[in-house]
Structure formats: C-alpha cells, structure tokens
Length: 227
Image (cartoon, rainbow, N blue to C red; front, side, top):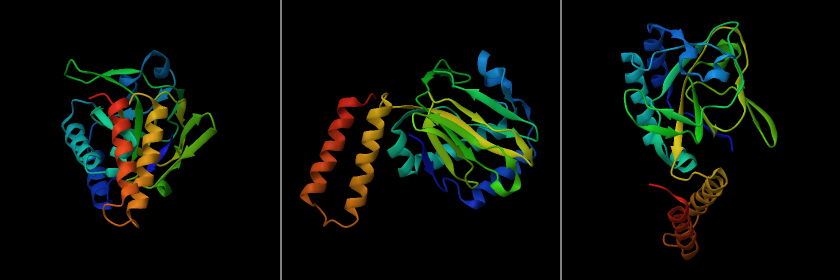
C-alpha cells in the first residue's frame, strides 16, 4: 500500500530545513546501504551523527507525532531516526529492497523495517528525474510530490530512484516498525479508520453505528497489535 501524506511539513519548515542542509557536509550515501543495494546506490548523505542531521531529524519526528494521517497509516511502534540524502545530476539508486532489520546508531536497539518513508524537500520543478519508483502487485508507481509531502510504502517493495538529470533532489528518509506486522492487516485497519473518520463528519455525536465500528477497529488492533 502506497500512501501519500501531503504537507507533512509546511513551506516555512521546508525552507528552514533546506537552509540548514545547504550548509551541511555531505558524504557518500553508500554508508547505510547493504552489500547488494550499495552496488546500485549513488547519492550523497549527511552522517547520522552530525548535528544538522540530528536536529532536523527531530523536526521530522515532531511532525510525525502530530500527523493523524501518518499514525493511521503506519501505526508506529518505533521510528528510525530520519536521515537526509541528496541526488545531484547523474546520481540515482537502482532497484533494491531495504534491509529487513536496522540498528539504531549509538544504541543496541534493532528495528524491523515494516515501512519505508521518503519526505521530499525539493520543489519538483527545480530538478528533472529523481522519481521514486515503487513496484507492487499492481505494477510500477512513480512519485515526485511537492516539497513537504511524504510517501509511505512497504519496505519489502522493490523500489528505485531514477537518475537526476538537472538540479538536486533532497529528501529525508527513514523506516518504521509498525505495531501491526502484517501489511494486509495494516491496510484493513487503515481503510476502516479512514471510513470511520469520513462517516464521523456527518453522523450525530454518539451515533451507534460509528461507536460499533470504532469498537471493531480497536478490538482488531488489540488482536493484531504488538506494543
């Protein structure tokens, strides 16, 4: 399930982050790649231990914590500290699948990567190429949303970043371990939650049908969730 979350960051937040990133030290992005993906990964990245990376990562985390759409879609248990990458002309990332498990830098904590996330920080009009292409059972999906938008997709999906031909594509990326391991179960809970919210805008407060559907949602989450 590919989910587009528009305006996770507002234009002022994006401009602030871009300003800090323009002064950051960028290095080889291959340092966070596995053996296979490292052979097709050609981009730049800010070190996970750098001050700009840590500070800007906290901005992203705060935005996630206050995003009902993200919480509904991901049902997050753990979020990997956001990283930042840049693709200049000629750079891209060939087809790959993200590592199943990541160790959080500086800790002994390991995180199962149920979901991958890309938060776009460049205006799509400022660069050519750089589309994120995700393969699933329904075919290929190429996305290149507005700056401040985020896409969330199963980490088990084959995906790639098309080569950039002009400008620079800057983004934050990270992984999420969900409380609900099964992607099918997450998709059903997401659809149920979205339906409850839509019906709740027109139903009377305390409508019995909405109460029953909400109870069903939470009982399913109890059945499938890990906390």
